[in-house]
Amino acid sequence: MRRLFFLFLLLFSVSFAEAAQSRWNGPSSGEISEEDGIPVLVKHLPDWENVLPNVVFATDIETLRAGIGDKPLFDVVEFSDGTEAAAARYAAGTLVLIEYTNPQAAAYADERIKARIANFPPDSGLVYRKIGNYAAFVFDASDANAAGALLDQIKYEKTVQWLGEDPYLYKRFERYMVSTVKDIFFSTVLFIVVGLAMSIIGGIATGFVFYRLREKRRSALTAFSDAGGMTRLNLDDLSETIPQK
Image (cartoon, rainbow, N blue to C red; front, top):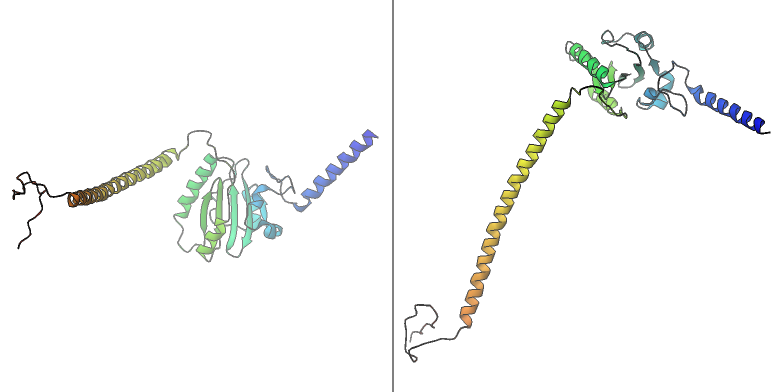
C-alpha cells in the first residue's frame, strides 16, 4: 500500500511538472521559473504575459536574427557561454533584451555597443540602455520618449558582484567624496549662519530684558539725600529730578 502511495505521488509530480512547462515550447534556458518553466529573462520583458505568444528567445545570434530579422549592432553582439536574449514587438518598437552572465562581459559588450552607436545618425530609430547585466535595445523606435518609457519598465533584480577588481570603484568613490564634501560644506555654512543669527537675536533680547529690569528697579527707588534734604548733585542718577516751578 505504501509503495502504491509513493508511486501515485511520483506520477502526480511528473504530470504537474509537465503541465507547468506546457506554456513554454521555446529553447531551453539556464534559468527558468519553477512555476511554469518559462525562462526568467522572458518574464523580465514589459507586459510579458500579453507578448508571450510573440516572444523570441535565443541563446545564439542566429536564432535571434531568424526571429526578428537582422538589426543594427548584431554584428558586434557576442553570445558567449550562458548569454541569452529575449525579444518582443511593442508599439514603441522591437525590444531586445540580452543578458550576460557576469558584470565583466556586460561591461565589455557595453563599450563595444556604445562605440558602434557613436557612428549612427541621430534618426537611426535605435535606443540603447545598459541595465545591470542586461543590454536593452529598442529597434525601429519612432518616438525616443516612448522607447525610453518602455525601457524604464525593465528591472534588473539580481545582485551584481565583481569577481575581480571593480572598474567603476574609483568613479563611485569620487562621486561619494564630492557628494560628502558638498553636504559637509553646506551643513557647516548653515550651522555658522544660524548660530550667528541666533547669537545676535539672543544678545538683543538679553540686552532689552536687562534694560527693562534696570529701568523698573530705578523707578521703584525712593529719593535719597545725604545732605539733610538739601539739593545734591545727581552724579549717580539716583536722585529725583526737581520739578521746575
